[in-house]
Figure 1 (cartoon, rainbow, N blue to C red):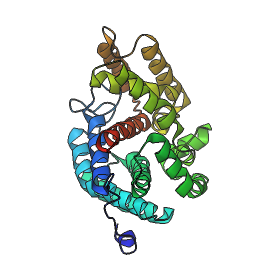
Figure 2 (figure 1 turned 45 degrees about the horizontal axis):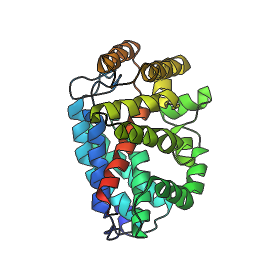
Figure 3 (figure 1 turned 180 degrees about the horizontal axis):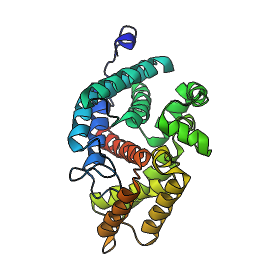
Length: 291
């Protein structure tokens, strides 16, 4: 972002992990999420889910436009930039996304969530530490928690935030101000548990997605389906997991059937998808960072 770059010059964060590596992991993690199929109501390489204005090609154009953003914001985090610099960087990234997609919102939530996490990773790496989830969460809250809490109190302007406010749900901004509890307390443990059990990677990601869907106040679902749509999706996710998840016989077919139901209801758990991508990003960082 031009304004931020005049003051904060992104650089290699530390010998442990560079801004380039942090940003590349974010782009690859968003591709991990896109490539996963079946995925209820969400865009995959094979279908558009509940969407009529976007497909996998739209997402790939967006990813290409956002590659530099994640590197830049990781560098800002390494340099100790204040929250307003991060916010301006994100606003610039959103403009790039919309220009690449013809005005379609493919990754607004990921720009916010993964951008903040990349900044936190830059801050942790600049101190010579490995990006362990607990350190990432602490860095996020210690450095920008007050500003995020202030941001969460702003009147919402976007459809998801308006739906969350109207229905008394925890918005994406409020989730960030709390240090992304669903990511750190649900998604990351679910991914670690499924990986430890030796499940195929597709099943690990599906089970992680459904664990998130089961508990997240997903403002995308609330906007599209109201409180009834959100609760319906949460019940479906809990039922899927209670039946044994993706690795059971017929698990992928069950996920596909839930997807068909979501398409009929026009439900799309975009917040859960962003959280899955963030969990994939942390897994990728763990593989990159030297021990």
